[in-house]
Length: 79
Image (cartoon, rainbow, N blue to C red; front, top):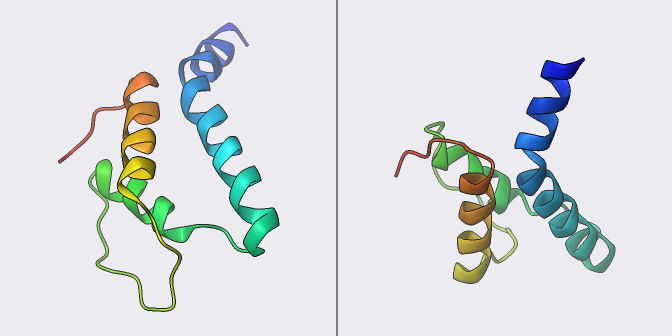
């Protein structure tokens, strides 16, 4: 349990960012921002190409906040 809680608190910045992101996007659009998820996948080395349209906008400021939350959680990013 102690090891699990250590991991939980380690990824807390990313968890909080992700919850905030979903809470602000989902009620307005009824959609998840899969562009963000795809970007997060790419940052850790899992790439699958571009998403097909229609797709939501994913602004540079959102990419920067996503990247910062992942780094704050101790993830090693592939760029």
